[in-house]
Length: 113
Image 1 (cartoon, rainbow, N blue to C red):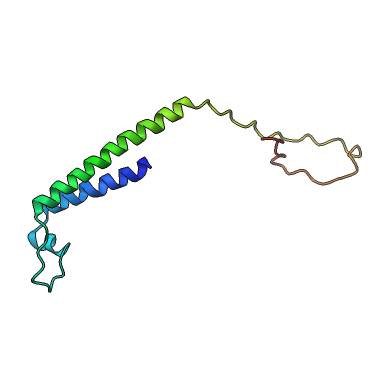
Image 2 (image 1 turned 60 degrees about the vertical axis):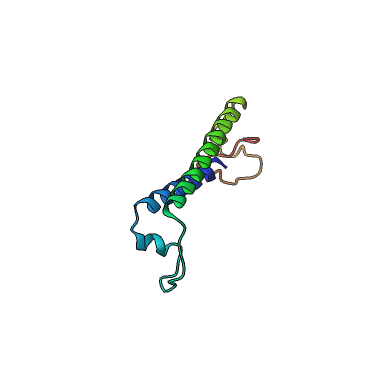
């Protein structure tokens, strides 16, 4: 979830910056059809302020989420790594168990690993 907060915060911050620096025609085109002369976009100050407030809320969510995830990871016991694959040792010729199946060169997986 903190990753989603990060994406949301980034999008809101970019939208606030875009609303602050874009030309009037570009800003209007985000809210209104170019042929609709009766459409009035929201005030630029309102858009910038509301986007920055949303970005700040997302930033708070990011901080809370990442600190909780970090605390959870530190509280969990360390998981042991599985043992490595063991390369089989081929028995001498003629002493097999009745099955002469070839053993792969990479070795056989260790049971329970």
